[in-house]
Image (cartoon, rainbow, N blue to C red; front, top):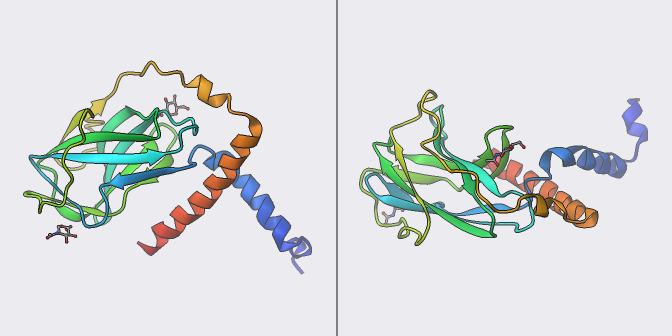
Length: 197
Ligand SMILES: *[C@@H]1O[C@H](CO)[C@@H](O)[C@H](O)[C@H]1NC(C)=O
Ligand SMILES: *[C@@H]1O[C@H](CO)[C@@H](O)[C@H](O)[C@H]1NC(C)=O
């Protein structure tokens, strides 16, 4: 008999969940609302990204990348995008980006690779089919040219923002644990969604 089989399954699950926490505590809640399934972005046009996130999650900047299912290589869209509020938006002007219907937007910290969120699958064409929402008012516009090129780096790097990051970290322990538990659930759901794609 395997030694682990003496441990009740519930306890083992709990242990594994806590074991995962340090890796996932930053990824509490981050949903990319636009683009989503059925949206077609267009080259030579401004296409909006909008998101909703946990206000007290401590994630005040993110890096944005474009990925495709069928092709290797990432398009580095923007680094250090400021995300201090629970909602935000960014406009993307596309130029000569390869067309396809298997694009995803990734929100992550590219320094240590922690993923905060991914969009649903969407399409990019040369002349959009009218499904892309109008550009987000007041949001910065980033220009993205061409396909994946590992030597190019991020199209835009935003300057450090002046908002107080450290204040976010002072959230009391109990609340942090709640966030952490929620994030394990979120990560499990995300993992599940990833496998069915
Ligand atoms: C527009 O393109 C998207 C993605 O390819 C597709 O899902 C959607 O059905 C298209 N809409 C129209 C009106 O053709
Ligand atoms: C990624 O994490 C590093 C180390 O924690 C931090 O210095 C950097 O600002 C983060 N980048 C973003 C985009 O949040």
